[in-house]
Image (cartoon, rainbow, N blue to C red; front, side):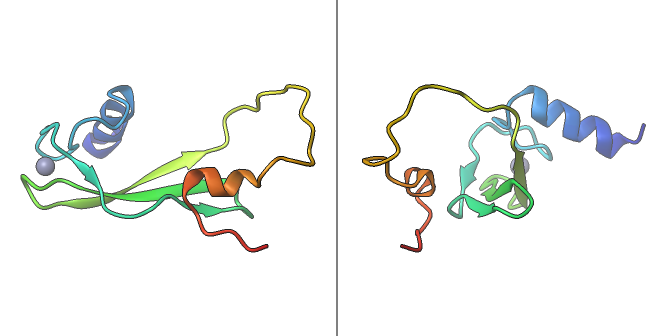
Length: 87
Ligand SMILES: [Zn+2]
């Protein structure tokens, strides 16, 4: 178990609310959520203005929520994440 692994785990435990380098809570997303549909993975660049570090939050598909949905009026879920959609 390296220090880096602990650092990542702590960052995840804090739900990505604090800079993993200086533990400042004043961090900000500097890119839109980018989704790689092939890998079912999403990522977003985050910057800490305090120490100037930039890193990438990575998200993976964890579960699905099932409900009866009428697919006709449904907009592609990509758009709800602010990602340009190809129609
Ligand atoms: Zn920082």
